[in-house]
Image (cartoon, rainbow over all chains, first blue to last red; front, side, top):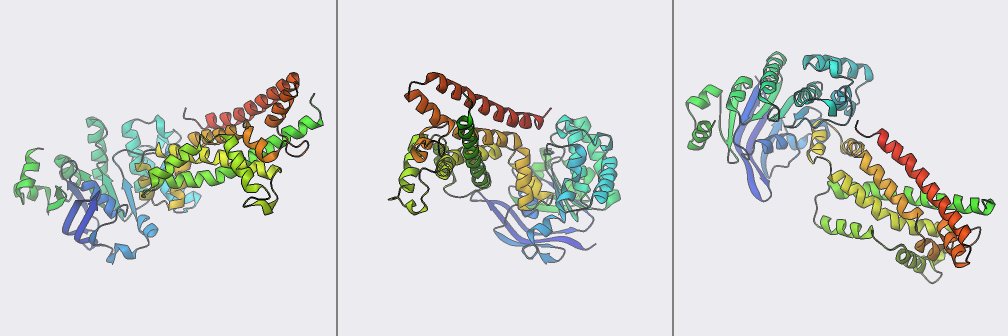
Length: 239
Length: 216
């Protein structure tokens, strides 16, 4: 598998302090990397940096072999899709929300209609197409948020604790649906969570970020059996 | 009572206030957006100045604008004093901080992650701003109504820079002051009722548009 993301000597500072340090990390095309760590560890900073919503202080990130800074910002962002913890849907119908990113890219109406129908069905929200976003339940809204991201056919999908704001039964169902989608889709995904079970269910590999530093990368079993440092061991103990 | 002179006065009032509101919107919407989304040193100071500007006494604005437009003033060569254009300038100075300040407040009230989400879906900066305006359309319409309200009802600035000249710069508010000073209270009351009805109808139209867009 080739690498879609290569990171070296990365440092991101926020509000005058070191928020994230990654010496080296490669993310393979088609894999799902689950990023785990406690609250405030730097996981969201990692995703925001990859989305070019935060500028790194130092280091290099390569996307498809080229340094990120050489990519036109807009062109790069149209190759990725970001799903936040809260659905952050716009005040419009479900169908219009799912179509939003496609409209930004100037897709034609027929293409939009086809893709919105396809991904609405895949995420189980096709029957809600005409409903306004503020009339949805939490689980429905998060499904729409996922459909809105998948419809863009992104090279890289960034998900920041997408299920932490929904109730446990809904969360379990969403997780299963997402896992099935990711394994059939083979889409490169970075899935941030502080839940180890979720990470193990969704991720091909796991990356542990603790106190703003990437401590270990490996399969969920490897990290569980051989934590690379005391801080990783402590984090796993607390789960 | 409602003769051609009243019609002229009414028409002029609507024209100058509508134009001043439109210019204030063209200034205030982008400026307020920049203030709301920006992250730079001095932002709070600028916002404080804008918020202070929302309470500027119209007669003070009128005095400053008049002094600028007088023949001996900095822009005296433009010969705008005692013209409808002078009233538009003065009313724009009154309405622009209102529209700017309320625009900034409207956008700041949105979820701060909304802008990041839009960018994360591939929106360009312009597309992102357009979507944020769309999300804040109800308070932005309120900003427009507040801007219009601040100028259609003011008299101090219109008097100072317009001179209340019959057939040229007399608007409803200055006409009311004139009739009152002449002791013509019935005329003054009739003009007041006309002003209130006009203001109500315009705000009714804007409110209906606003509520049509309101969440169910």
